Length: 392
Image 1 (spheres, one colour):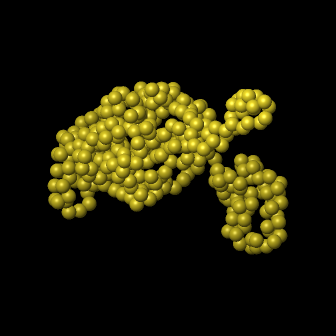
Image 2 (cartoon, helix red, strand yellow; image 1 turned 135 degrees about the vertical axis):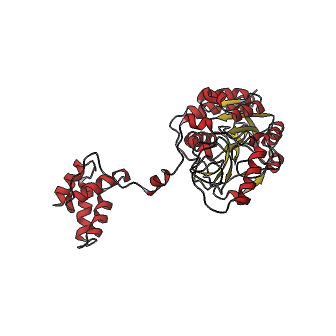
Image 3 (cartoon, one colour; image 1 turned 90 degrees about the vertical axis):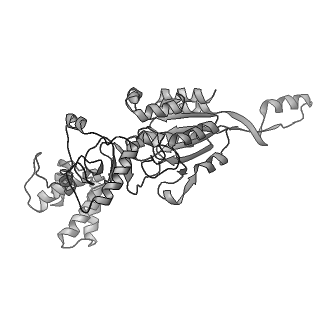
């Protein structure tokens, strides 16, 4: 019977081998699963399935073979997940309907109206255009649409129009152990390297040793020099979370490549725009925040500053005090950008967004202006251009 089951699994796309079959027989002989169908199911699944992608196929074949279920065709009837049903309550609008919805008219008006609504509203609201609620066109709430609003209690961004997020947000660190699929990114970053011999003389200078030994009538005269090291210093400031979730893979590749190429590499995270605080670890973000002024005091102007981000945000985050999407900042983002680019002699911005779309985002154009044009696409040619700029 089990041999037939193995053949059915293979027909169903589960690559169960003779080795796994023998393992299953050994486990059954040892009495791992006696006369309980659930125990038998988990035992066979553990012994015969080696890739989680095949779990659904295994379940289908197991149900057909042992429980007498009818084989299913491609049009399987499935129960809709609860999350899908909840999403049906979202406000879905056509492009024309979106264009008809008006913003309140600026940062100050938006914040003033929010304070008024908080004071007036007494209960939950859904589907309207005024109160704090869900699935409506009000600028306040979740699962709706407004060209400019405050996102309250929504798990993730949908239209990326929020100028403020009323929620505790958790981000993950970029992985610096990602295996690079191509060495080209590393090769592009190597253009930044600058070598010098510094420190104690620990490396044999072969040419000078030969010359000195010859001049010393053949008596060996060893000559040592300091090790040749890459002296370039890099400070990476990485935008994390929000719209940057779309670019995690390429940013991890860049981070991993930079960690392998530069000995003097420091990094910090920010969200959308640098303000008065940066942080080193996203999992313990609020416990490991570092004042940006401390970063300016710690790292000298000889560090090359590289921002990595899509510069896609509300323009208020750059121009207004309190404009940060996450907190009320005392000084506008552009003030901190001027401080950072003024302190570090060489700075550049790497943008994972396709360059052809840059002119369609106001905040991106503003950030490029603050960088005095030193914004480059996160591509191999963009890395090459950035390396040339920072090496001048």
